[in-house]
Image (tube, rainbow over the protein chains, first blue to last red):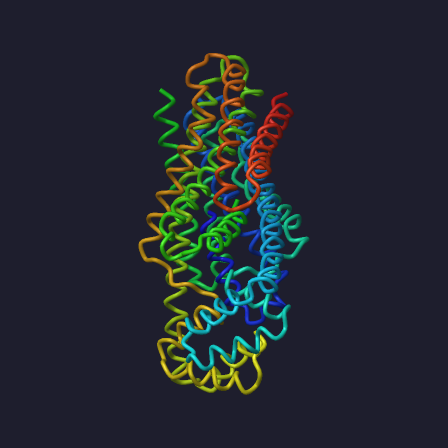
Length: 246
Length: 246
């Protein structure tokens, strides 16, 4: 799923006309999409796989396995996201210090790198020099420029890591409880499976529709694709678990 | 885990001195990190959770649940990554067409946006105009510039989606089989749990060490953090499964 985040991030950043204004709501949406995407899919497939393999009185096992999975998955994603956020921040601070150091002590190297940027985007030798001179006048502005366009680093929001971890973790739990909940109320696993498949595929479709709207791709195609991943994961888990049952 | 990808991507991009040359190996490494990170953690925690809840003859259930989870997780991550890659590509093509259209039909708007970019990085009114004139001379170069710096979009490699899906999926499977394999060879779940904890925490530590090296953060701290996430997920899954057992 990780791949999709990069894309979502990019898509969202570019689709909102004023990324600064909408930053907060889009970050939250992105977190929800990340958490719910896996939360709806993996516990769904795990429960489906088990329901074909545990025998008629195994509903309780499915519930326990599902709960354990939701617990493990939400912590892995949430805490993982938190630590990644912290790492990103450490990395930003380290690079920022290094840039300030280089601007002071390796000025000619930084000048060259700045010229190289302007050369890469297609400016003439003459303008490369002039633009570099102007940017290098203000040290803070110069470092900001290097951070953003040489290193491709945006200043991370210090509170982001914690919030993001919570949003992703909670979304995973909410998403995971949807496919699992039918098994709470039935005695035979296969009954649970039938309701779970119906409810979850419907939810995946709705979720896929909204996710596609947010990321600006065709909504029906997107809804279909998200549903398909869930169905494929569940079918494969069911088949493989059946194989190992005997 | 998704958050960590964005960060890894950024970190790798900035840490390799020649991103163009190293692109392929770093993409593969990134995929392996993504897949193995979740693969080592979630099946480990699920198996740990179940081993406290299934009773002395439940080893077989743990194996089936673990296999179903690895199956579900690898498909969700792999196929999810594939479709996300396709979406990214569609999005890039759409935006590329739009930029070419705008350069032809809304030239004054594009000129303004280009000037705005140069104004934002701190160039004077005079240089903003000159630089914009030079960039706008070559239509392809101008569109490339807008795609990269106005929209923040890099041209996606068309074969990337498929390769990435396979790399991530396989890494998840390899990672997931490590914590699960002890349960293949023991009869009592708790014996499996003990070996699984030892083997997996060791692997998480080694994996965390390499991951930190690649992303350029403190290796021992990074190794410790990755191990901690795995241990926390397993402990929580164990505790919660115990609660639901009774």
